[in-house]
Image (cartoon, rainbow, N blue to C red; front, side, top):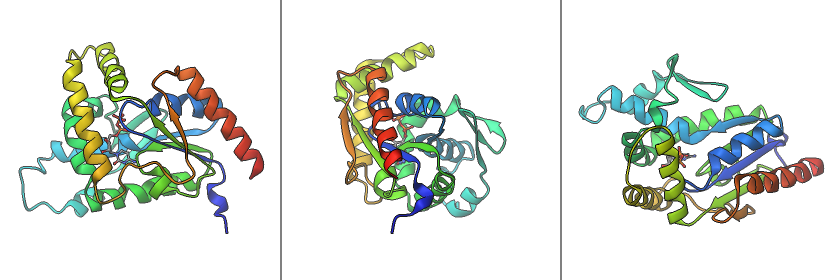
Length: 225
Ligand code: CDP
């Protein structure tokens, strides 16, 4: 039987730079739905672990650390124990560490539960790497966004530059390839196209085109349910 609590959920998965965040945010806005960026959650946990020196202290118990952490969402901001860390979690240091943290069983269990709780309320566009496969496989619309590595590196480069972060496009491409490799080969919840997901290659599509495709499909699916 279908789980009715997930009736109005759009699950968007895909690799870094495939346009998930940009597209998901606009779709949510136009369809009057909540936007949930699960990557920001993994980034926030990584930020916290770096800040408390987790990597240096071998004896730390990750479960108790996670339980001392409060994540909240306020509009498009993410708050960690009350502090807005939306900017800090986008740093190259976090880019480099996040996939290793996201491999951990305790971290995934902790965040997956939190994501399901939010999605159960319905009316959510939720994006990440394992939403359609593990977090909410029963979502009525599952989308898998892709794009060539070169195009994804170019997008990330422009994004960082617009924030005043100077970097090298080759370095970004290498980092993206490395993250793709870790994310798609890990044992737990690897990045793969979910069953029944609609795949959209965004390499040569504008944001507007992708947004419109998803909104059309969303309306059609939600009418049926
Ligand atoms: O924005 P970008 O696509 O570069 O990355 P993100 O969506 O912020 O996700 C950062 C990292 O978190 C990914 O590379 C994954 O390692 C991890 N992640 C995950 O494992 N599962 C998710 N549902 C979302 C992100």
